[in-house]
View 1 (cartoon, rainbow, N blue to C red):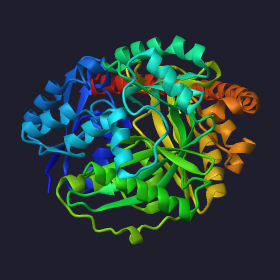
View 2: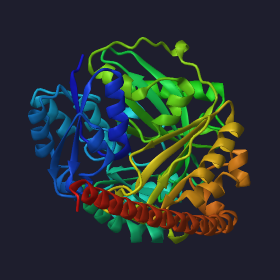
View 3: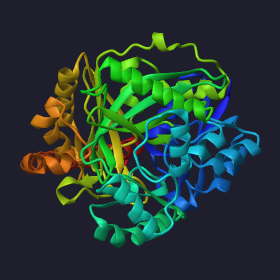
Length: 497
């Protein structure tokens, strides 16, 4: 059993891991940048160490600083959370080299899935369906033209080292292909340090479905069902739910078996996710995230399995005590990512200080967050403020609870995407489960008026709340002033002055 774990991350995922550690009787060590010295994960942890300046490259991506902090703290293991170094095989190897346990899959598995081209080849060999396209890297424009002609337009030009929807360009004809091929290489080089690209058939209206897997170090693997992650902006997820509104038991079993095949092909041994695109009754491998996902919460809600604890136990060498037939799916869960961004301005990030923070509660509501009144949302990292999760006996109840929770949520001082989420929870296609990765653009004419309406209502409410808070502060200041005068006079009376 681990005695002490360092969490090489920040924000809500660091807090999530800290809480899991405490429940397992393990001490938790936090690291933080100078921008995060007052962050909640820092004050919650048993110990905390500053690892550098605000920019991530000088702190949360600084491998040497994190290893040094782990050595100072005398930890047994390091948990990477998600993002930053969570899928960096070199970091995992450094952790192991310095004598710490790595809470995640073995580095070779991370490396195997780090290249989209290599990952696709592995999945094809394992018998997992993949999107038609090039067999490997595309070297020049003539080769690109031949492949595009064979599979048919439109085509997607993708960065091999890309992820999270970043590094993808679309060409609808040969002229567009010529225009984007070089820019795609440049983007791949600048974003990921690797100019390698490949081409796939572009699916025009797919759903984004992912399968959660749990695997130990002894070859035991189960899947924990699917998540619907189709509502995205700039290919970054905003709303996730489990189960998917359109996946039946037969399709779930097929996708689950495919995910397990893919995981076994790389001897996977942790908590990870295989992501698929689904269209017209067919599903295709997209990528594998070898670490815990932001949206793991909805799977936890419908299975009752604590994935963060499971990840730690697997790293300790514990065998899975679950078989596939033991997994039960109950009810429905939805997660809205509450971000510091303006949905009326193309979701541009809006960092700043939260002046007043009040989170929702009540039956079926869960909040994963490190936010509170007075906290600063820095401009250096992802604008995620919180993950708001609701659970119900069915999808309708989960939606009803999400509507109520979003209405209760108060964040004053910065713009957030709460008005957007409120609009989606009332939109007809969402309610019917008619989703795709193009949901926002396809429904913007219906969503925009409601987003504007809720944004205006929010500003009016926040103005009233701010005025009340200001008035209350004046009362408190006056009361303190009166108390100070009373104490001063009492002291004079005591001294006989």
